[in-house]
Length: 266
Image (cartoon, rainbow, N blue to C red):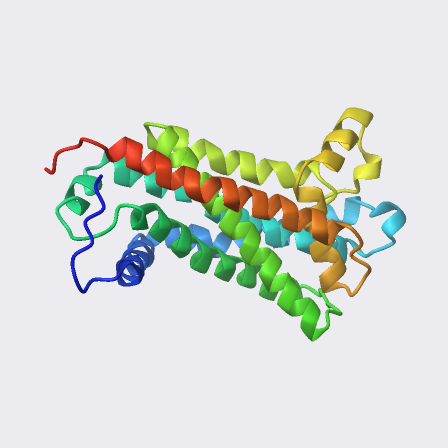
């Protein structure tokens, strides 16, 4: 797909229009809107009321709701962000890209529009999960700076997952395959220090939990929200997320250009 920026039409304006298009499309799909709104609520209630009485938090000494809320925030935003792969794949396979080729827009703004819309939508989903946690008894002790860093970390996580999801959506050829990415993102927090203490896991799983990105991300969020020492978790989490964004954003642009090269308008 060639970049066709017409005089007087800015790339920022193109991006804004495509973001609004993606957000409006979400609002029109009632079942998807219900799922994206209800999912954070169901996950939070499930962990607090169903699992909470049976799980101890090990050496942390935290109440289970305080222990698990950071992981649920990550899961709520990450699952929705992973569905960017499906939206991206639908555009590539349903003829929408051929329509875009007839418009004076830059090709790179199409995947960028999906990513930005996902960030807006799924940071909101994380906020819903946090509101439900507060109703269920979660009482954070974060300072103003802690809240700001929490927002930055949640936003960075959603951005990273959305960018990688866009890459996956461009690599696969069916929406069914694209949807598989969401299961990976939803599964990883379970094998971290987010849902149960990693110290209670068998050796292999404990080592995996220590090495994967969700353990420092959840630990950093937990420290920020509860005004506990964050330690090296914040730096490690930021490095993981920055690396994912640095890899995902240019890879999505490159794959999109290759997938649309030489296609004729419908």
